[in-house]
Amino acid sequence: MTTGSQGYADLAKDSYADRAPTPVGGEPVPIGQHRYKILDHADNPRTGYQGTIYQRVDTGEIIVAHRGTEFDREALKDGLLADGGMVFNRSNLQVPDAIELTRKALHLANSQASDFNGHPPPVTVTGHSLGGTLAQVTAHHFDLKGETFNAYGAHSLGLRIPEGGNAVTNHVMAGDMVSAGSGHYGQVKVYAEPQEITGLATKGFDNTTHWSDRLRGYSPVNFATGTTPHNTLGAAISLADSHKMHHFVNTNSAGKPDHSVLNDSAAIERAQTNATAIDEYRGNVRSTRGSLTAVSRNPVETVIDSVNFIRGPLPPGEPARLEELENKRHSSAPARAGAGTLSPTSHSLLEASERHVRQVAEQHGLPWNTGLDNTAHAIAASARGQGMSDINLFRVADGQIRYGQLDGAMLKDGVLNARHAANQPMADSLERLGQLDQQQQQDQLATRHVSQSEVQQTHAHEPLMARTV
Image (cartoon, rainbow, N blue to C red):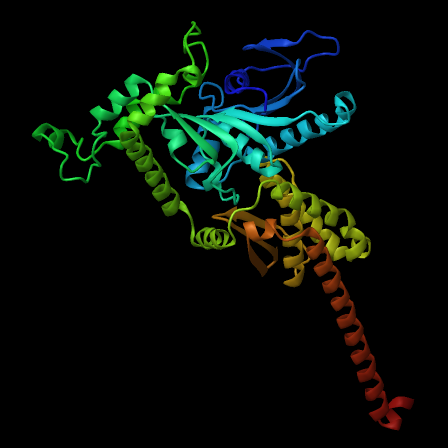
């Protein structure tokens, strides 16, 4: 990457602006020390996602900047649905959008290979806060490089993303609670401003001893005010400014000239000197986040977490490779499974299932993707196996999909684990539907044969007079 940390920070900040693509022959946009063309801009009001694809004019590098949390514009979606979801449900509604925009950037790079001696220009990622999380996710998904700023670490999202490595550099402020909440994909660089160290000290974070150390002394005032052994929440609240992007750029929160910590050796040295207090604070924040996540997960999700822990993380780029393989399977699924010859009942169930799944997806602002397609087919196959011919009852809650058919006083119902359904290949569900159709045909033929045999046997045993009457 020739774009330095300051260049990435400038783009992460600029991603909060609504950029229109640069028209053909249009003037590039000056951002920081470089000039860029805007190749594309994504804005999904349903999920709150925004992202911009930049191309540096002098080097041709393509950078995808995922926008972070904007509490003044998308407070509900960004703050509650996205950031809150990462803590309590380890999910993120904006991940599919971020992956799709990054995939588009890779396609754009490939289309420009002839302009760069047959080699596509490099694609990297960046972002601040939630945008930094999405940068970590997409960097792992496609095996890309990047830099983030005060990101919430992607390790805990349940996406089998490893912690550590060198693919992404994650810049964090010492007092930032968000970046302390989860492990990061890539390396972490900590910076500290004087007011952060002072703020930690006033909340009971001593830089010489751990709070449990008997050598750390406390006055009656400490006990009376609740600052013993520490006050993590109080520190997080008092240091709320640490999360803001202005620390990493050369303008302050008021837009006036300032200096970036990225170019301030004193900020790095200060963080190293006060590592004991900083590590204690950030460790407490992460422990608190882990407890909140654990108590909010239902038993099925907890079991899945355990299975994923045993399976271990996926290598960088593996999600995209698996996605490509799955898409190839789907493209050949109709021919393999005989989808074109499915019975009217199976077709009806597929239509009903997809209709219900699409309604739920639209309610939550989810773009249609492979997982949702898998889900619709899995429900149809399961319903077919339970003897249903329609799905007129449907509900999703607590990670479970409940579906059924109410026909007068007759009720047939079933339940599927949502995550299992999303990971069940569509081709397998189509094959199962075909098998069930074939089994029904065989049963109908057998029933018809038995009925004909009974009629023949009845005629054979009737008295002669009865047959001649």
